[in-house]
Length: 193
Ligand code: ATP
Ligand code: MG
Image (cartoon, rainbow, N blue to C red; front, side, top):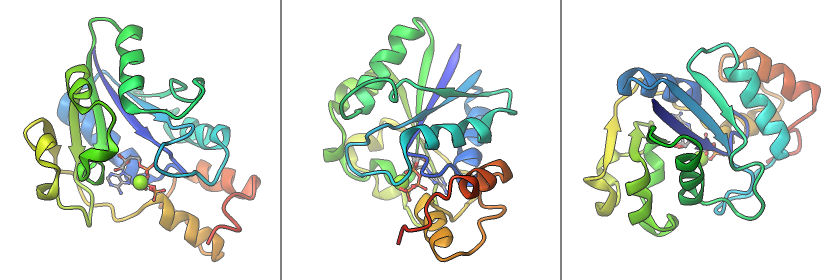
């Protein structure tokens, strides 16, 4: 089994995430890509509740045969570090080849990663290209250990989606239709700046 783990706050999940996961699955010939919703990311405070973010990920991924959703981080107390998640994944799927997928913005700063040496032993690190983030500015430690994957540029972020909603603008075709409806139903992000 070749298993991709795609972590994020998914606040909310958007088309850039889905494209990154899909392209990674194709290029790395992954059997599954698990979207791991971060409960309490160490470096930022999500806007929507964790369960709402996770439900949107379920809605966005449910029809793609390669995609799975994971509560690996949601169901564990305390701040969630990637290295702990990968250790749990390794126990969950012994013998599987693990790939940790992130966007190019994730590897700029080594200092934001806990136990980087252990990290790169547990999984192959993958960086998908992302508009505005230069893969050549990747931290030197990661440069020779991270596999870059060039994907079509989708210049969108959850921050931008939240800003649009707060301004009363449309997010159609930036997020899956089901996610758009879910956001409206639960009146999410309306007061975000
Ligand atoms: P925020 O603006 O709240 O930080 P985000 O759009 O960066 O949201 P995250 O949940 O932080 O989304 O990202 C999860 C993962 O998806 C990260 O590894 C990030 O680099 C990657 N990613 C997010 N958006 C894109 C995109 N448009 N293209 C490629 N990768 C992306
Ligand atoms: Mg981000």
